[in-house]
Image: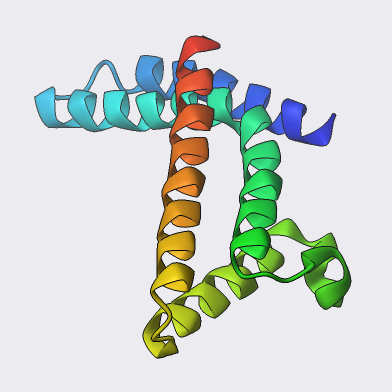
Length: 127
């Protein structure tokens, strides 16, 4: 529920930002509109981001052939776990000569990027 509330608050912040700065010059209005648009998009995507991040962690752990649930106590923090998995993927890509491993990691990273785009798209559609 916390994450849904945060998304709603971010979306709600967009309107006053745009409205309060509508009196300024063209540059002020442009920047206010951009900030409002970013707040609205982030707020709309927010409820989908944590699920996408957790799924991304599963994909990366599978590609790295590790059980991320048992591998590190930080697995309870999806952001810390994601950082750890991405660092491990980067290290693996830099040090491995195994073409299958590289292919598997590239596919996992592409799938993770697709999840991120899907979460952002869902946020835009939730307006």
